[in-house]
Amino acid sequence: MSTESPVQKNEKGHTHIRWMICRDMSEVLAIENESSEFPWKEEDLIRCLKQRNCVGMVVDYDDHVAGFMFYELNRESINVLKFAVKKGYRQLGIGTAMINKLFQKLSPDRRARITIGAISSSQPFFEKYKFSKTDILVLSRPPSDSQAIKDKRFFVTMTAPEDKPQINEVFPECFPENEEGSCFEKELCGAIAFVSGPKVVSIFDRVLEAVEKISAESGQSDKLAGTVKYIERKKELEMSSTGTVAGLILTTQIEDVSQAMIRDMLITPAWQKDADLLKKMILHEIVSNCGHLFAEVKKEDLPLFESLGFKQIGQVMEYTFNENTPRPAE
Ligand SMILES: CC(C)(COP(=O)(O)OP(=O)(O)OC[C@H]1O[C@@H](n2cnc3c(N)ncnc32)[C@H](O)[C@@H]1OP(=O)(O)O)[C@@H](O)C(=O)NCCC(=O)NCCS
Image 1 (cartoon, helix red, strand yellow):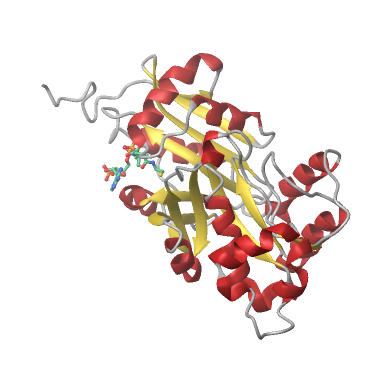
Image 2: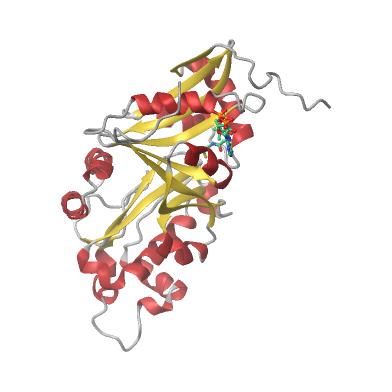
């Protein structure tokens, strides 16, 4: 079998970057399948494109789609979700052209940051263009072989009183026999651990209040704006009369998709004392209820995620634009 690439390095084809259209889907999927160890399916890509702030772009190279990228355009940053060049078309400057396209969307005083969860093998490419590694790791966990997945259930909050014996079995330390006053002991029955997915159990005003409070305290309003909207939409569907909010897990790619990305875990100040335990409980619930999971987590949370079967596959990298930051030549 010949290993020769369809185009030779330095042979300049005509490169044009444009918005993705329906007709590109099969070529994009082919690139995704050969480039990613955990490829998104067509429904994942479509769902992503339906989000108001998500953009899909492709690179036309002599009448072929030779690369594509998906990114979220946030107020203060661009978050790249997918970035790949077709095998045989790599090392020709196509990745650089896509990076340049992203750089054009930056401005020093408004949107000045690009982030990407970069797998280990691509990190030198992004380092070349002055991306630096953050302390956020990218983790992956294969799907659990549970009935819940077969039933296509997704995230469920773990808050009902009848859950207590089961939780106690998995995490005996949640309800220490002689220790009175643990906030789990007192409040677990009503705690909203996180909010996400089609099987959301309870959504109500207090969740929104907590999101807004956490948002103000943590300065993550940009990241949380979508969550607020999502909760508002879902609020109409289900209401609950009891509960205190303990924290939230922020995700992307929720509902009916084969993969999910955990973006952040926020625990309210009142629950900080038991934060580690709470995170463990919530994660346990998630991994036993959904498909392939990814997570972007801080280094200090790595042992917790590893204990639940996650493995590190990369690291979030970040580019911050200022007038002195060099950009690649066009
Ligand atoms: C990483 C990737 C996007 C690079 O695209 P590309 O079109 O080959 O990149 P370019 O041709 O623009 O390369 C620009 C420079 O980066 C270098 N480079 C490209 N990929 C590299 C890599 N993986 N490691 C080190 N250097 C790399 C090239 O050698 C070139 O250097 P030069 O200018 O000194 O010759 C491509 O290899 C790819 O699609 N990989 C699989 C998917 C992936 O890893 N995506 C990243 C997000 S997880």
